Each structure stands twice: as structure tokens, then as C-alpha cells.
Image 1 (cartoon, rainbow, N blue to C red):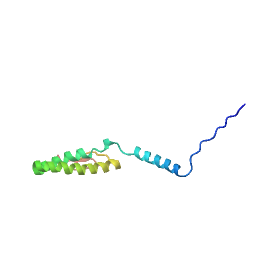
Image 2: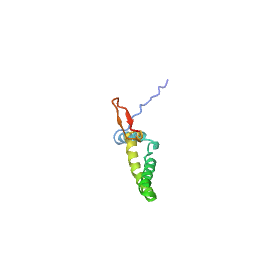
Image 3: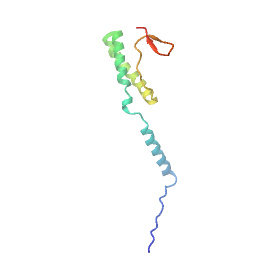
Image 4: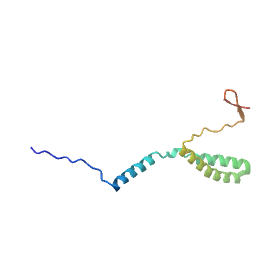
Length: 107
């Protein structure tokens, strides 16, 4: 009866092992990148910039405010997306916090 010899697979020593671990680290880093749906700062920044610019300086201010708002909103949205900071909106009224730590509007 012939006995079959099975050789154990060995990892190559030296440089290829480092490349294997580097490739695994790159794939892990790419898996952790936020999705494109988190980068909504550009659209919101352009909308708010054009609204405020149009309100303050007319149509020319609206055009300039839209461009500047898109740039700044994109930068802020990218940083918030990378850090995972959620956007909860702003309060559109002036007010105060009562004794129970609830925000109350003056209106």
C-alpha cells in the first residue's frame, strides 16, 4: 500500500509576507471609508449660502453665496462625515433652557 505524502503549505519568508500584511491593511482601510451618502455637505452648503447671499446682497450675492457655500459646506461635510459627527439641524428660534434642561422658544 502506497502512503501519500502531504506537504504542509508554508508562507514564503521575508518580503512577500510584508506585502501580504500591507495589502490586508489597505483593504481594511478601504472598508472603513464612509459611504458617499455621508458627503451631503456640498448640497446643503450651496443651498444655505445662496439663500443667505440672495437675502443680503440680491441675485449677485446669491450666486456668490452658492459657490462659497458649496466649497465651505463640502469641507465641513467631509470633516463631519469622516469624524462621524451627525447633523441634527439648527434651532430656528431664540430661546432659553429651563430648569429641566429643555429648550424653550420665546415665541
